[in-house]
Image 1 (cartoon, one colour):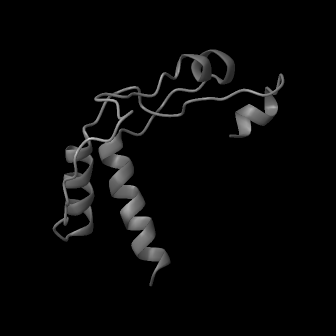
Image 2 (cartoon, rainbow, N blue to C red):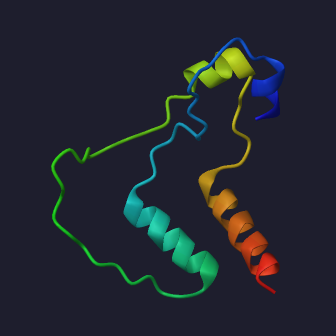
Length: 89
C-alpha cells in the first residue's frame, strides 16, 4: 500500500495475491486447522456466473509497484489466526 502512494501515477486497480490458485476446499480446511475447530460446510449448487478457477494476476502490481509476495497462503492463514486470537483476548 505504501509503495502505491509513493509511486502514484493516477488510479489503478491492483491484484495483490500470490498468483497461485488455492481451491476453496483447501482454504476452508487450512482455516479450520489453524482455528482448531472443524468447518461446517453447506454445499450449494453453482450459481450462474460462477467461475470454476480464479487467480490474482499480479503482473501490474509487480511492474508498477515492485510487488513481490513473500508470505504463502498457508503461512498467512496461520499468522492471521494467531493475530486474531491475540486481538480477541
